[in-house]
Length: 207
Image (cartoon, rainbow, N blue to C red; front, side):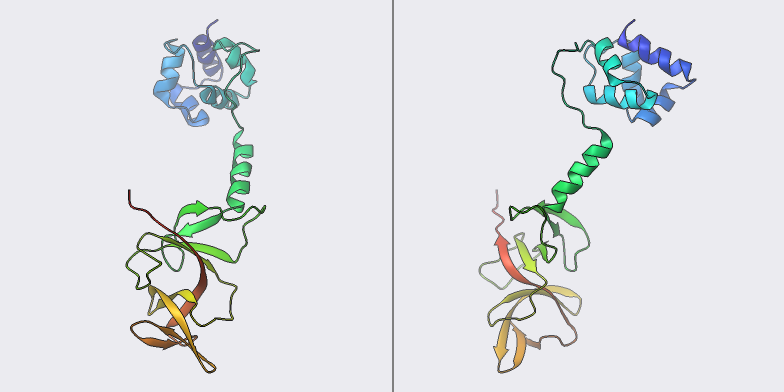
């Protein structure tokens, strides 16, 4: 019995159409049709795993029928639940990069440390437009620490002014703290909301 014949037999035994097998396995119906027509000599091992999972059979049965010998090295196919767990572990060690302030949509992830988990107080943002700071340019990525509350003179902070994202420099004057650039705003006063102190810049180089 060929691989394609076996797929068709198992499907018919369950009274499934090709569309039903496609829905249950995640393998596209035209691909299943090619398999059952024996027109594919070396099926994708990932598809073999998906079909075996839909049929609730050992994937090794399909491997042998598809021509993969038992002692032949097969591409490693990770079960979906384990794959999700591994992805979550990887993402847990990385810092999300948001497209704007406040963060709404994640556009990338970066890893800046060797620890097992990323510090929860760190965030990153893609600089959307022009900034009046020489070390920061459009499309750079800035890393911020939202746990810093003791602002120092000269600190850069990312904030929203009247709901508009801005990168401003801190200026201390006696016991008062201001954000400066083209205007001065007293820190902590409406309409200002500080989202973090800039602790790093990842440069974007035009290709």
